[in-house]
Image (cartoon, rainbow, N blue to C red):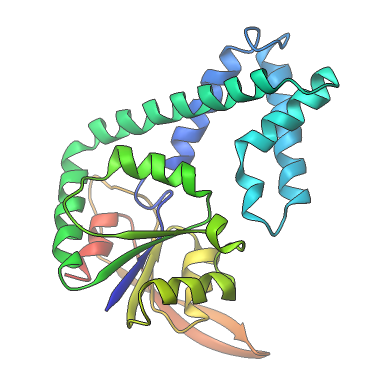
Length: 249
């Protein structure tokens, strides 16, 4: 048996860490050659949107290195490799600090999560299915996860297509050697819930990583159109990762 797991905003508040990371970069705008934080943020947003549009179907649309290259050319009309690499270095430095802070803040909660995962891993293969580049995810996992249980990861960068594409689904199945997949646990209704329900895999929607007063998993319904036929499907929803994981003990 196997269990598919999302990572960002399911196991880690990646959005919150990303936002605080960018705020720190913007505060250093003048050090990076911009007149103000506002100017820097405007260049960044334009570059990010361009990359998302130009690389719509490619996992590369998430690469900060591409964003910083675009900013460099737009701002100074010439390539400055040293500046681009410094921006990426600072970005990941601040991001890693954010991970450490959240791990410390939620030390008790993460201890419980890893204990549950260790128990689950004794009977089920754990595969993290993620729409990110591999380097970024390895940095996160290295800082957050202990080495007390086996797991694997499949990034969209390795597949060349993002989940919930058929290519990604097939690659994930191969990694677990065709084992019966019990569920997909994730925060995205589109990518994790709807996406995997279309392949016949049950899903658990996690609305937040941790909650002060976790609620029991609640059954939800969704209508999906598959091969021009509308079908009713159900999934579970909870506001705490621990509640979701305990369903598979």
